[in-house]
Length: 68
Image (cartoon, rainbow, N blue to C red):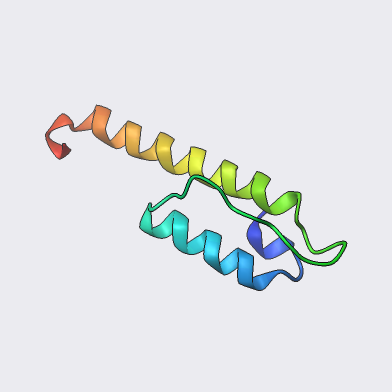
């Protein structure tokens, strides 16, 4: 499942996509909305995307330590 698969809750989706893109992660996020808008799935996707980004950054640093 990807962000595009969640219908509705675009405001939260866009906010989380921006966080992933910019790398400025907060200590907490509140998911709100009516039933069925992805309040449970959205945080799971967010965590998955952050993990993938961290793994890619780690692999890049391991391949070229001069990046630091």
